[in-house]
Image (tube, rainbow, N blue to C red; front, side, top):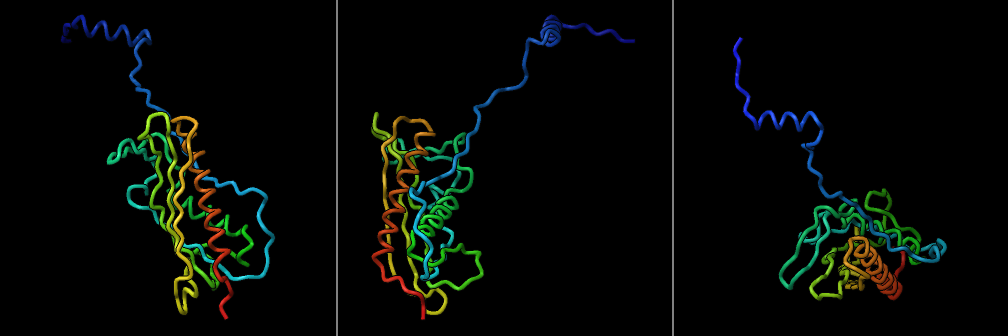
Length: 209
């Protein structure tokens, strides 16, 4: 049997581990996930005969396509947040909010997703071109949202532009917390969808012959 000398440091470390005084696990900040909810009030209009609208999947500009929140801290500086994020890609969340909002508007007989196997009189395409928290001005944080949308008539047989709508909205934040930013985005999204609905109401929406 071979005997090896044990140094004082090794002995001290063993004693600490035996006493349970040393934790080898590192604690990290907890991640939080959020969704968007425009929160239409009043339940919407009753369904009525009218054109069929297909809401196509929205796309997001590359800078805002990730699930992590984006903060603008200077005119040319943005920062991504790894620990606070959307539960799903933000363009998918916006697509679903648009579909639900227009479905309750009473402007269309039916509003369907891109997966629905039905013919549509109109198709709505859109881009989320801005979605960030603006913290450039100390003491005045804001939520920023910009949507660019294109309404296409007769998308399968004779596609033509029926309406182009750009909605850029901001909402003041109560504080700089992620929860406050989500509330601000929801308010900005609500205003954008109200503007979109008004623009759709002004268009000549008729079923294809």
